[in-house]
Length: 499
Image (tube, rainbow, N blue to C red; front, side, top):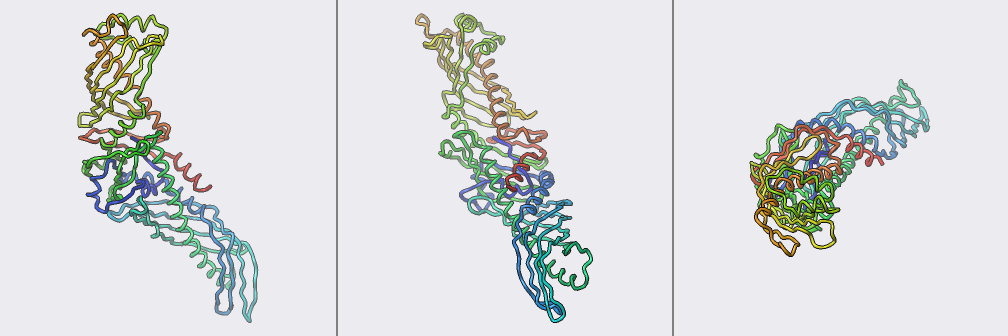
């Protein structure tokens, strides 16, 4: 389970991941959807605040090719020109705005882009009146508005964006030769002609670079998402089942959510998702099906992830918890008199999870062995079936798991002692109560730490997450939150873009 927020508004177009096929009908795609992401318009506004940085990267990273040509002008004759070494300086962007267009796409408007283009101009013109050819440095003062209207579609196994609807409006584009800000009429005639050529050149290259940056961003986001949802041999296929749906209030994407273990994919049944299960008052929503979590539990079990060893003083400290059952004498001696007591616990069956409005129910069987310092057989071995209801929360950049109800049944237990291999009822009651009041809280505490650690490894702690809620529902859970933009992701993306 992960929280995926990304580095600019353009991420909308690519966060949805890869897929083998996209269904055209969203309602049909719901059946094959086990994870959903909904990004509402307030989130679009927050992300749009960072869009200017990506646009700046597009301008600065653009490579403007040299241009050569010739034409004829009245009174002047043939004009031969060449523009080369064009670079951008003093770039600044005024503001940007975003709109969501239902069923169509996203529109981005970036206004008051000011920049100075510098390069070298080779030019010549001649007639019976005058003949001149020269090579000089030049600069172009510009003020531009930029508009991008991406269209989303399914292509090459993922959601892609067609950014060809890209336009630049030039409010000012003045070319100056040799620092002359007020050229005479002959130079002005020539300057106007070259300005028109530069306008076409800049427009073509900027729109091309925006498309290039968008593709780089697509790869960047896909890589981050795959890393976020992978750990060792366990991963999740976040491929989309359909193109995202855009309304005036949100963008919603539909993911297959197939758990993968050693490249073997889980098989899921028909999904219970419907858009009405999500609201719009938060910035970001994740809809997570039990059919994602159960295969992940299965993979973690087979990967021997559910193991815990507790020894020494830590084990002795745990059993200072007040219990109503009497601690057996052999147990007391093991904790207090043996040199290094150790308790080994592991899952002996695949845990099963079911979410309902009352919380998340987890059932499974655990085995345990108590060793009292010797190299031989364990002093105590037992197996218990555990059934508990858990609520999940996230606060202060940590995951919290709270057990609301638990039932423990000791399935079998035996001692290594030849004199008393089987336990009486009082000893079984002690094991049951110890599992319920000591074992379950300890295991949940370890889970809290490990899940938080995994999220931290992916940089979740760098996100500003506000008022997160985990809402259990019948067969799925909804994670909803507001957020602040993680600046580190933008920095990393821009660093890679400008390499």
